[in-house]
Amino acid sequence: MTAKIESIDSESTARAGRWAFAALLGGNIALSLGAMLVRMADTGPTASAFWRMTLALPLLLIFAWRETGGRMPPRPAVLVAAMAGIFFALDLAAWHIGILQTKVANATLFGNCASLLLVIWGIILVRRLPRGWQAAAIGLAFTGSALLMGQSYELSPDYLVGDLFSLFAGVLYTGYVILMQRVRGTLAPWTALAIASTVCVPILLGTALALGETIMPQNWTPLILLALTSQIVGQGLMIWSLPRFSPLVIGLTLLVQPAVAALTGWIGFGETLSAIDILGGMMVGAALVLIRLPSRRAAPI
Image (cartoon, rainbow, N blue to C red; front, side, top):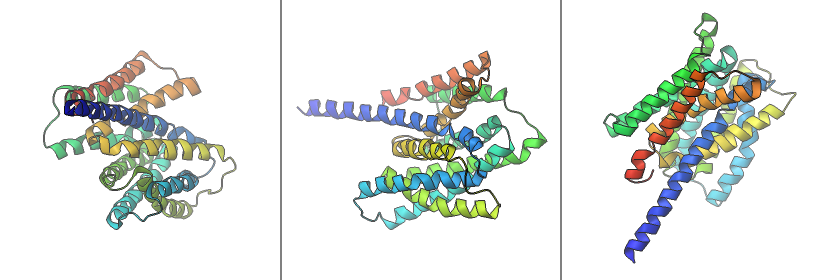
């Protein structure tokens, strides 16, 4: 009887792990649409980030209220989530400015430096270098991303400011993910995301006003889509799945975004996908399969 119960628990855990990995991938796919929607918005870049948060916040607060039953979360956890919100606000401000001052490929490449930094952070935490399937997955993922971005990326003095903003955004996003992964041990996902998003709103509005940006849009559609796809779906799925994975796995799944960006450009804008682009996307996909193999031999993650 005990063996049967343990078998059921093991199957349930494995199923939860599969759903969590699907959620992590789905969140990154939704987030990959953000750069295109920021370019379509008729507000300033930081103002579009402000509306992303503001439009999503009522839903996030409702979801958080249902999670907590109206009870106030522990103060230390609230402070950590608020600090994550500060990192996230500065990340969005820097990345949105970078998107408009460099090529989308450059912004995607430098903004995703968080993937490398999270892999390094994961290695530091476990105090050993990846081996076997993990090492192969890391090599495939970063090589595939380099192939995807290599043809469209362009190093130029004209893009230097935008490149630097995007790189800074990637560093800030790393801090945000690490803090949110830590606080998710105490707070439920919508509660953590609602707190962080609430902190973002005044920071982003103040930054947009200080930069003299256009705040009020004429066309609300890109901003509504940005709030739904990036903040509700993208961040919602990612924050829910964070406690179930190591920083290494989270970092590698961020590399889904360049692959989806290339596919979106092909479908939506008729941008040609070369054989190298296709090979790069296949390598990223293979890396995501490989990074799951060790967890099936041990405990599901």
